[in-house]
Length: 417
Image (spheres, rainbow, N blue to C red):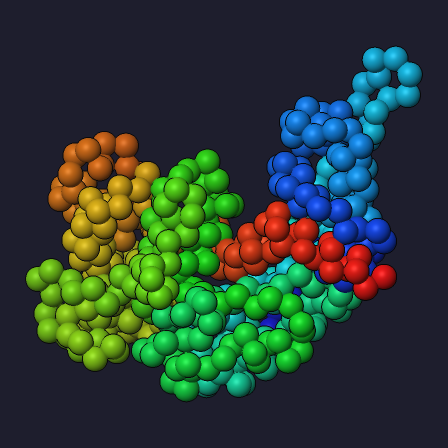
């Protein structure tokens, strides 16, 4: 099970006093959540500015601001220039009011971050984790790590808004249960949210790890884009689809399962899913390692492959580039079908440098329709290991900070006082 733990903390920040959830004294004002949406851009505004933006009366705006101030979600942010008399106060979204946990579980790793409500990591823990050990030992490690991070940050459990988890296999997002995951024995149908909610009574959202990486890369590195395709090339292969700024999961959460698409011209190599010739079976890190070993080049892990390519090993560079070409044959169809503005290649094999990207570009630009590729860029991921945890936290933040849910939480806290 997990070993070699390391905790990384960002510069110290003062924790904001909280009463649990979003509530505070007298905080049941309807419409406060809608006002918060305007302020989530971080720009401080006065009551008068908010009244002009919303078309609401000053008294209504003041009531909503008071409710958000009481909850801690809003904080004073200096004063505007005076036009005569007392300078008007400005208010801004306070992301440090509460915290969120983002969990990224891979085949052999576990990364967890405690973030604020803007998705900014406050502290992190990383371990070697064997997902094939089964759900109970892995999730028990997650529970222990979350407690550790909360203690490290000096945050109370009432500060916790929710937990987001990414798993390396198909997930039914509506229930949070893995569905026949090929590399996760013992996880099929396991109630992951229930395991976590036995310890914290907060929303627990679960998704495929590539989906949360797509979210993390989008909000961190490319927030201006509407359409993005994120492709992870590691032990397995998968894709996360951002379209119209929304993550597309499909009818049951299976959208983006790129690794088990049949690769054109691929040999009939048996895949972990039971089919033959899947993209994952011929172009993943595992497939590259098998190819190198058969050619007499020793490699055991994806890190070994990356080191060989960076060290100038010609066989390794050729194998990675060919994997890129094979990926490109499938991605060319994806580009013509989805028409993304950007294709981002992430995962451990992407760290091998230009070999993988060059192979992908070679085929995609040659095979996809000119209209779809005229302005298309294919680039390496920039968020690195934080993409998963930031994406998992973002998934929770997007769920919890909708106008309706903020209003419900404020009203709930007000009603018990």
